[in-house]
Length: 507
Image (cartoon, rainbow, N blue to C red; front, side, top):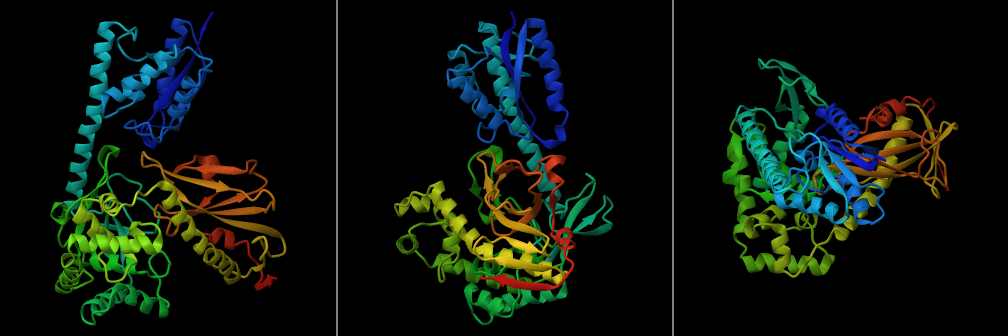
């Protein structure tokens, strides 16, 4: 009688799309040769093996093992590295020990040894685990060195261009191929991305921010109020805040410097804010928007604000904020007038968490969740208004029910608009959970996926109710053709459904 078993497969990136199939071929042949019957397959696609966090399939597998109700006696894995590239070799051994304690044996089907508990196999496993972790460490060093080299050559390493700048795609010979829109990425490995000055109006506004800050001595909050009163918007189409103005006034890209490694998060370990002298930079890589002397003066003003505070004064200010707000976060600190930014606290105390501990504050995920949800609730009416405005602008009609928030478009179909909060797993992957309004049954749900900072829309999913049979939907960064067929960068396609111009409100 065949022994019941399950298979576990993992691939690190979406570029290894055939990896899991190749693993399963070896695993199935192994099972057939040894009288093992594979009941089901647990698969982690596009998941790093550095940590257990974020590997949902392995977590589910271990949960079944520990439930004492597992219907299998063996776990089939391609090799030790697929089980995990844990930086602590004992962590991989621990998870295998949990299985062994439950009477379930782990088989490494592609290895040259039998995992039979012998001294030889245990020694080889230990060596393999160390080698798997070391491979990730060596690869991290090589990748970082490659990124640094590209930065020093003036090439952009990810991230949005920012206000007043644009991303330009160039070929391997440095010839421009065209600007990249927000969300667009290069398709050829030999292509590179550089920053170039944006529209003249945006450049002049950036220069004006520096002039107001340095010459007139106005703080970031006042500058934001001036910009908003004049109906200027950020590159994300949002209102200016103290924090967004501060970011413009302190970023070296506005004097043409290509900067990298401000923050380190190597091997999914501790996040570290690096001091300025450790940044990787190429000076004069792009045409500057702001005069260097003006930028230096602005930086001196910002630096002086943190230098003239003693540690105790900074902590006293933090306690005062905590008493008023009931919680602390980088966003809350950045919005305080007359105080250094959150980055100054990180620099002075090593990290924000250490500063929090010194004032007796212990943050937890619930507080951050509440803060983000509050911001999304505040953003929701504006998002709905923008979508309605887009429909009208393209010639459609809308009727919005204030009680249900359903919008009737062209007297033909209803839409529901939901904001999907971006969540970052412990492994650094992005996830969005969409909850459908099954009670109201709209014809189309417009799911607005927020960006990583939950500050602006990343993209949109147009989900017709006829195709949605579940109450909730979980999205990753890449979701396959079946789901990504509903995805769009902008709502222009949806707006094309509009045909007449009229708008009214239902009381």
